[in-house]
Image (cartoon, rainbow, N blue to C red):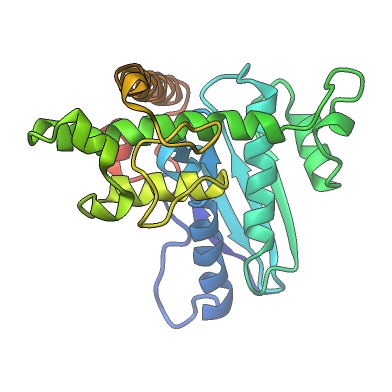
Length: 264
């Protein structure tokens, strides 16, 4: 039987690149599965689970059976956040060409059995936590996306203000007039996910709840909220990275060294 293509935290799967290595197909699928996992984000921190070090391993067998193992910074991480990440990881890997089945295993968490079982049968959050959960997690996801939009607004506006752009100019500016950057791409993506205006003609400063352009009198408070939201998310990210490093003595799969150190 052909061994599965494997990626594991702390080092690549396998120790040989000789001609006897497993066929390229499964290895390609393992790489594609890891790339799919990089699209899954921690809803609170708005960062990929790979960058945060949450992916322990990713394997895909020659027959297309995928298994992903995840870990979190603490045993008591919020079960709703954990459920979203496990469910999103399941959906992302299941969408990889050639993957016929997917198993996502959250390890070392107080609700891992319930979460793993619920995601495996695609039961939803309410059915998984029957008698405890009262609603699905769509609004929770949307709330954190709105925070990501605010934080992204600060990431885009800070360099503009530092370069001398006035607040009045920011109010009049459209996304198409903002210099290209990774922060701008990220902001536009988060806005699009919420159904907010994200095209080149959309205003730079908008209300993340309604999509309406921010008025002049509301701009100072809006920019302060954007800054405080960005600082809060970055602080939480740093704390989570520190707790994960304390809990596990290995880098996560797909986690760059600078990400492991918590560099921005």
